[in-house]
Image 1 (cartoon, one colour):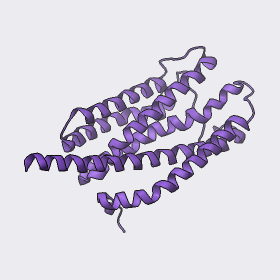
Image 2 (cartoon, one colour; image 1 turned 180 degrees about the vertical axis):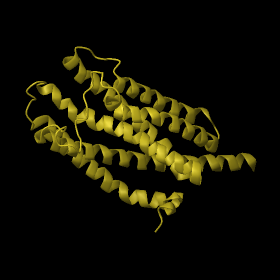
Image 3 (tube, helix red, strand yellow; image 1 turned 120 degrees about the horizontal axis):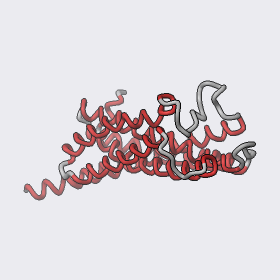
Amino acid sequence: MSIWEYANPVRFMTTSQKLLPWIGGLAVLCLATGLGWGFFFTPDDYRQGSTVKIFYLHVPAATMAINAWAMMLVASLVWIVRRHHVSALAAKAAAPVGVTFTLIALFTGAIWGQPMWGTWWAWDPRLTSFLILFLFYLGYMALWAAIENPDTAADLTSVLCLVGSVFAILSRYAVNFWNQGLHQGASLSLDAEENVADVFWYPALVAIAGFVLLFLALVLLRTQTEIRRRRLHMLEMRERMG
């Protein structure tokens, strides 16, 4: 079976309706386990105290904020190359979810940064690029809302997504590009020397899995809504023309 078969809206709707309860249930389980484990059953950090526990919200949210844009980029490229409407609608559906994760990351980062840096905000390379990414999310959604023709909107938002991907990359790798800045390096890495201690690492991985599953569930649900909305739009257009 080819993955392109799921570009058919009927097949996508049928498959996603079967998957949603399982993905949603696993998301709730992982989030409850990861956040509960992290907030209530891990020790305070010897330097940061209990403040470090916001890590279990901040890191998964920031990770998914960037990866959501990456998913939108892939879906936008599929639209540009293959003209599959489901991919364009999936990108549109992911944007509000991604912007919410970005807002959570910015908000929790400010809470975490204030006691660590003595300020709620700093024009650090990663923080600045993350703020710009947030503005790109807003611009992407505004562009979809401003254009009535869905195909034209998909074309223009796909181009915007390509441009915004530069800032998604900067958000992820800014600490590597610029040595200066307050923001620390990666907390979770394939390099064991850079990782946080295992006592913090394991619940963080479970929390991240929960955020990934939550993102998938919300995108599937919102894509279903966008498909139904498009069908309704097409019916209204036919009535006007008929």
